[in-house]
Image 1 (cartoon, rainbow, N blue to C red):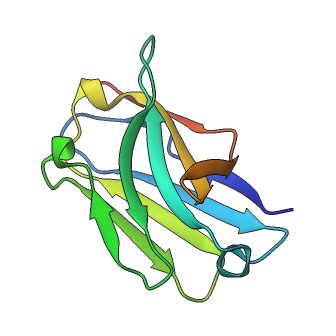
Image 2 (cartoon, rainbow, N blue to C red):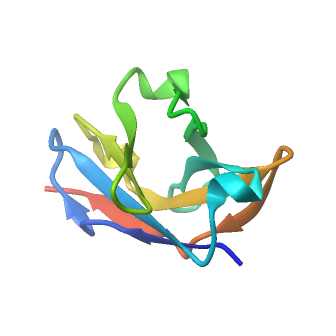
Length: 118
């Protein structure tokens, strides 16, 4: 069973860069046939899709983030990193990485709460 765990900074000041790491364990994501997405949930709101990284390393992001997001893959470790620059208070949310297969979320982590505040 593939497991995912997010790790984040907890608190980030406005205009700084938010970085959250997703660590996979228990199995091969590529062998499983899935791919990883980043999603977030602001306080009191629903889930919001951030972006996806495919097995080839190709990425695609939500236009709503206006180019501020980046997903990178660590080639030496089973890790994935989401960075979001020029953050604003509205970026406060619980950030999740999610393993998607056949269009549905199969595995996701416990999430990492990141608060953007001065």
